Length: 103
Image 1: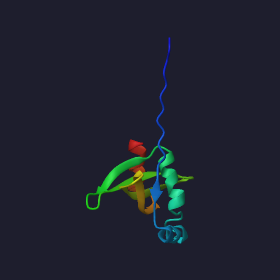
Image 2: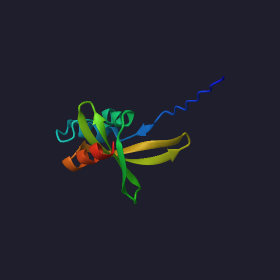
Image 3: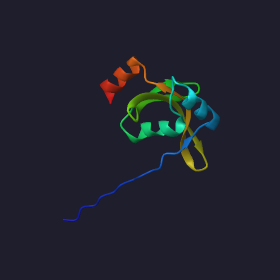
């Protein structure tokens, strides 16, 4: 019996403001920049829509040993879709509960 296996791997692309990322990393209430925050998408995370105008989404997930909330927009260019990272913070207790209930 012949079995076929098909995998489709797509590389996630990210865009963000480097200066803002450095400010976030230097802020003790944030603690990381957008480079590190991309780790959220490498593990199971909770996703919901934050607002309609502009259309923004929230991802709640782990970066290292800490749970974070990340706001992003899905945008498109000539190469396809990419995630524009807007802001992030350490997850609140309510966000932690959402993550635990749904992820």
